Length: 406
Ligand SMILES: Cc1cc2nc3c(=O)[nH]c(=O)nc-3n(C[C@H](O)[C@H](O)[C@H](O)COP(=O)(O)OP(=O)(O)OC[C@H]3O[C@@H](n4cnc5c(N)ncnc54)[C@H](O)[C@@H]3O)c2cc1C
Image 1 (cartoon, rainbow, N blue to C red):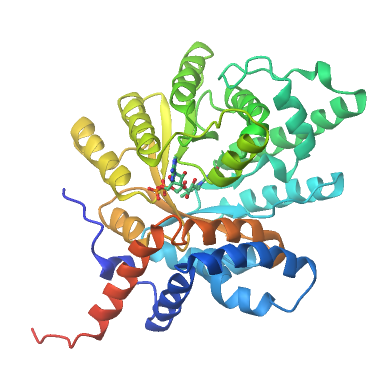
Image 2: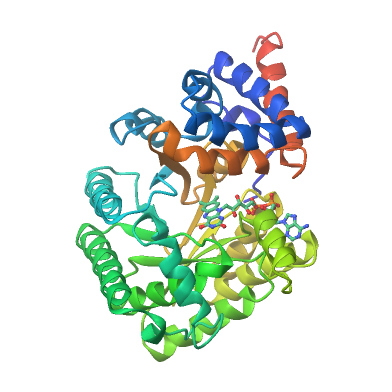
């Protein structure tokens, strides 16, 4: 079956003309590089200063990329997606909140989300950021002390921790086990996000431990592999080897990576080699090579292709077709962020693929870091806006054209 991502009628069937016009205006605005640069600097400050900008944000960028301010508010979007055979990955998008009370509250919220997902037909996964319930500084300290740097076998070296910090780490582990346990009982997958390289080693190590505990008979836990890192293709292969040795199924979500500028800036400032690939083609090559590695091993890997790259998505369907004679396989899933690349999501769904929208929710002030990353990703600096905008305009034009009589 030939899949094309050019059909805008399927892609935007769930959007009214008014929604599309609003999206067109938003993407046109995000196309202005200097405005995005200024906006991403000023908005977090304006929110902190309690300036009255919530209304503007809620009606524009929030509405485009976020499911609602509460779990309750995501229901409309989830139901709409279901109508088009599109699933949802719920993400309680609170970032940057620290303190034991906040960590406990976030853990409870993750559990609530899992229990809610279990009642819905089209929410197979939830997404979790470890920094939602673990102190960034603690992870940073563990990362610096990791004894098998950047490897799949990374164990957690607690020698560097004070007794208080050891107790803190124990709590993190208990929270993670609790989340995975509830997810396992409810048959919901837990996707652990990849974050900055300087905290990623303990995130990987804890996630591998969870896979060893929960991924024996089925897959509950998935790690995220960022292929914009030059070392991650090998890391993926090492993780697979570890999974084979320890006899668990590897859950892996492949992404290119969202912290490129931050990573490069820190490496420059602190004078160490950037962990990021030298250029975009190198990232693309490793991303596609990672797909090539996983597809023939789908018996022992559960794969999530999380990307807006048309080639990578199409290439995956071609490899599936070649290997299994079908674009659908029980161990593969596609996903795009809510508000982006509807042409990929809805056309994949139409072709019978298992596909979802990654749908964050949370109070406006808490999802600001997520929104600022989306603004940057969709700005002229990244070049993605052009494609998004041209598809929206194409659909608006198609709808405005006089209908031909049969
Ligand atoms: C379901 C889902 C879950 C996600 N989870 C995570 C997560 O856990 N952690 C995370 O970091 N991101 C995550 N992302 C975000 C994701 O990283 C970005 O949306 C993604 O990087 C955009 O790339 P793309 O695959 O859509 O393709 P494209 O738009 O083709 O590629 C853009 C990407 O290429 C890379 N790139 C761009 N320029 C260069 C350059 N000069 N040199 C090297 N590389 C370059 C960057 O990673 C950039 O984001 C997730 C995305 C989805 C859809």
